[in-house]
Image 1 (cartoon, one colour):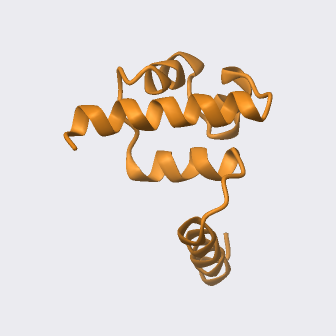
Image 2 (spheres, rainbow, N blue to C red; image 1 turned 60 degrees about the horizontal axis):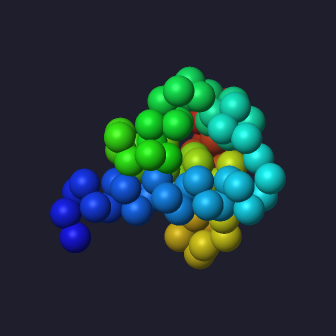
Length: 84
């Protein structure tokens, strides 16, 4: 799959999951400290999220996946170690 196709597919999934949860673009954008216009472009496949942004969006939407749970766990260890 080409980058463009992956980006469009990611956007469609983000929009679908957000709507399934009854959340607005404004709500989701606030959760990840992102401009709602930029999030709209991600959902339409006009822009592509970085890996970090994608993980933040998935966590904000409560999408369960073993990889995401592992990332959240590792993040908590980093936070504990750094004292932040």
